[in-house]
Image (tube, rainbow, N blue to C red; front, top):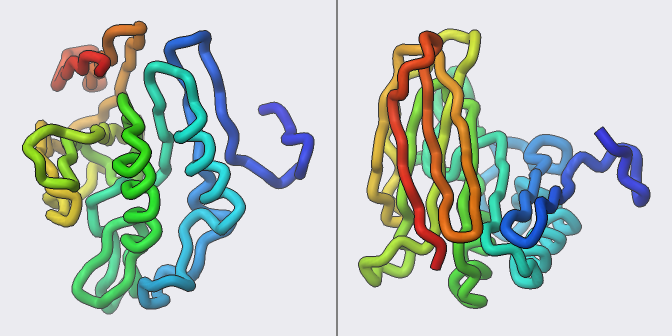
Length: 209
């Protein structure tokens, strides 16, 4: 992996593939607050510098498709119990933890600047989930998220998407090894999830807006 010129420890970066695709690879571990901290203005998943980099990048990108790669999902609560204090993903829980405030900052930028064709790719929960999100409640999806994996770890326990971003869940399925394939053109974004035998378990087509 190319070492960033402005810091050898910086992992977040963009990858541009022609006019049609820009990938924003996030570092959701190095700069984050403690999971057990209560959510609020002082809590961060990305750190201020990375957050501003992402917000500016989304606004300024001229690519047809803006893909955000995050190691933790947007709407699946992970942890937050006595055994694992604090939610590990963006979604919060009944204990008041999580990173929903910062997630909302990103969502507000997408909606406020009318950033089109945004797709989140995530993992970490060891099953397949896909959501079409309508956070402004106008009946039309504003962005999508696709979660896949694992390739070789134990399958995880299925959890429904939290309701904060008004998701329509396209699939929530587990119990098998899997991986995702993405095909991108100027006019389309196609996702396919295959299991360890190569059988297709899920596919979805998005048309560019």
